[in-house]
Amino acid sequence: MAETTYFPRRLILGAAMISGVLLALAVHMLGARYGLDLGGLWRSDTHEYIPAGAAIAWWLIATVGFSGGYFTASLMQSAVSGQIPQRMRQFLIAVGVLLLAGAGQAASAPSPIPTVSGVLAGLAALCLGAVMAFCGAHFALRRG
Image (cartoon, rainbow, N blue to C red):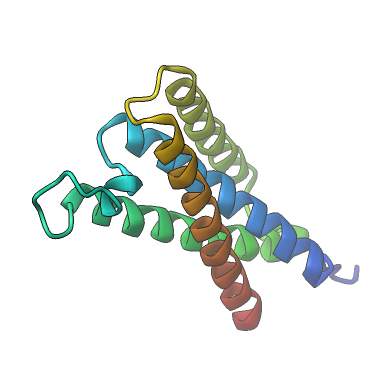
C-alpha cells in the first residue's frame, strides 16, 4: 500500500495566505466598484457616525480573507492524499479565475474614489486580508 504524502506546513501556510490575500483584494476592488468604500471611515465630510458601506466592506474583506485562507489550507491538506474529486478541483479553479478576472476588470476602470484614499484603502485591505488569511490557514492546520 502506498504511503500518504503531505505538503510541508510552511508551504500550505504560504499558499493559503497568498490565496486569501488575493481573494480579499479582489473583493475589495469589486466592492469599491459598487460603492463599498473602506475609506469612508476616515472621511470628515459625511454626517453619519459610521458609514454602513465602510463597515460592510471591512467585514466582507475580513470574511473572504479568513475563509479563503481556511479553505485553501484544508483543500491543500486533503488534495495530496487524493480526497478531492477531479470535478471539484476544476470547479474551484474556475471560480477562482472568474473572481480574479472580475477584479481585474474592476481595477482597470477609473477609480470612483480619490487616489490617496484609494491607495490607503488598498493597503488597509491588503493588511486586513493578510492577517485574516493567516488566521484562517493557521486554524485549518491546527484542526488537521
